[in-house]
Length: 424
Image (cartoon, rainbow, N blue to C red; front, side):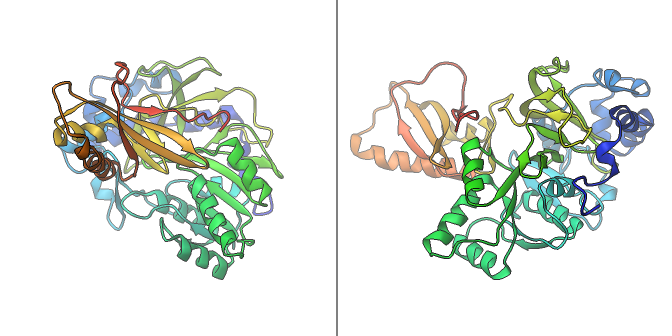
């Protein structure tokens, strides 16, 4: 169906048929999965798995949060018993921030990215410049495997080395960019500064950061059709934007083979359709099943069907974090990562990372207060701030400046995301 606006027939099956297929044999699959994944068996040990036949019954199972998965992995390395390790031969294993270890699943397009690429207008034979990281995390591989399954030719650019990346796009005449939203503009600006614009690029699928309305318009003005997908290292592509021609439809269509719920944050109870809640996903993969896995992301279910004709459930898109984790330049910043600061700097009283926008780029600043009894000569403050900045980069893999302030609000906030997703 390469000339069709739809990826395959699954895009238009009736919603009731899709729901029945998602729960067909669900209880039996759970029994099989708990037999091969002891961590999952412990997690579900107090529940009647034979009773899980529909979405309402699924809500009786506990939500699995990333902190619980991390704790299980630390107690029982490497996967906490949530993976059938006998199914991983010939595969890859990744380490995402946290740290959380996750395996690559079997088969072509294991993270179900081809459908999102296709919806963005990317087709067989397109040359794809992949500027997602191939280091440690699965980000680069998610897009790489999906594009190759679609029949594209992929250049694994990874991150950094802007001059080399620009040269590669020019030489290969790549039509497609995949990567974080803001790095695309870095490449375009670099090429324009050399008076040789990257005119071959016509399409982009971005993720790992917010595609602000002003940013999307800026790309459109430069002749680039840009769509975004919502993906995580644990689950792959959860949802993606669709379009009719050049018109991008509101919200995102949920990917196939996933059961997505929108819950009241911190609970297992669903919100009303249209209300904002935490995105929770179930995926019954035989090697790495995830049951009611809490992403920590906020969204809302869109009730009306998509104008593109797809019948999948729709989300309003990424609407913030249910917890304090925030994605900055494609990497998560988690309060847990900042726990090293008081151990390394005993004079700290409070600390908070503030995330804002500086033009078209994410900006991060560490604000700290010092204990009242701490005294420090003014001449020592620059070196102290520099040491804090180095520790911040070491713990988050992201750079940011540091400011010592007189006070911070006593509200428990450690990661303060002040970006405006409606207007920026």
